[in-house]
Length: 310
Image 1 (cartoon, rainbow, N blue to C red):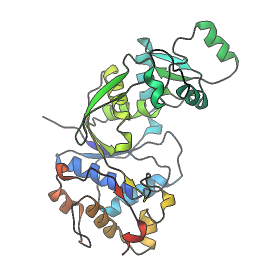
Image 2: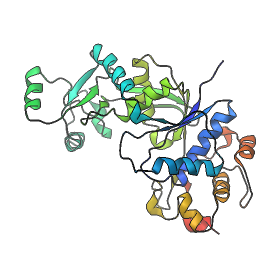
Image 3: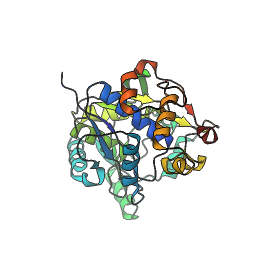
Image 4: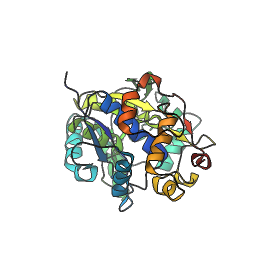
């Protein structure tokens, strides 16, 4: 059976930190260990920092990671997203939504959620605009408030199989397909792009695990093939919060300035994954020979920057 590629798809909003680099390494290991190609995609539909994409590519190369084919940028693929939305709209599966984020938050926290919408319990969209009349739509348009386009979901929950977490079920709400600025939303873009690129293995941080059922459901509606998921534990700070630039020397340039080479960072990442001993010199190829996803740590990696250099 022929397999498609695995991928790493960062957002070029800044430099990659240790958590991003660790996920990239894992995505590379999962792909190469299963005989897959490995591709890169820049998810640049949102906030972009000029030059961040090139710095990210340079950091991946510095670690010794390689990839196949050219890097794809989502900002060049609007026609594919529009075609998917047209397909859904033709089946009556879309509707305009005029809600602001504040209104959605307030609806989600209301003491008496809309009957039949358990979705508000976790902050998901409560369906406020789902059944607006033509007059109500016209009234909202007349105010000049821009509308987003949402999926008219036919289920409340969906289940996916994850290589690390096993069966996972989560809410599926009326997710946004096109934002109110006219740009395709993340959940649509990632589904369309993975299918267009033949990706059938998605390895990413487990903060995105709850998005997988939404995306798998949407892919099914579009007649796209399923993907194999592996959501890996995040790197977190001492407070068990998602690692960020503010946590100190956690990017490759910062660590280099503090005296830790790219090869040293690869070693640190390998130790965090149980693939090397502290201080051992490793290469991606050596880690590939040792890699067994069944032996991966299942808990978050707590990063203490002051201890990385010791």
